[in-house]
Amino acid sequence: QVQLVESGGGLVQAGGSLRLSCAASGSIFSFNSMGWYRQAPGKQRELVAQIPKFGITNYVDSVKGRFTISRDNAKNTLYLQMNSLKPEDTAVYYCNGELRGIYYWGQGTQVTVSS
Figure 1: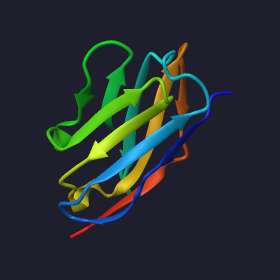
Figure 2 (figure 1 turned 90 degrees about the vertical axis):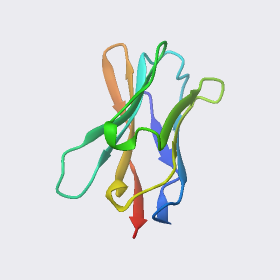
Figure 3 (figure 1 turned 120 degrees about the horizontal axis):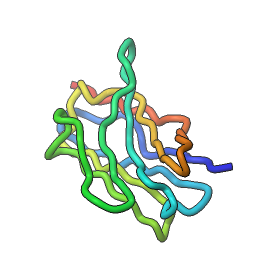
């Protein structure tokens, strides 16, 4: 059973930075695609950034130029570097990975950006 565990969330002032990590219980090299989603109170979960096994990354327009997604296959860890954070980035952030047609989710980590 694949498990994804996020960490790195917290409270930060606007303009600050956080780095989220998502540790997998097994090899992430096998995942076809991995990504970060977020869900703010009263809103639908949205894709923030996605990184395929091969190819280019993509980002939702609202985070382009501020967030960077990366994966370290040797450490079985997915990252999301978040810079220039804004209050509207406040949400629970979830790690996601697709393996053989099955989508796996972490439990989420809270990010709160104060103005």
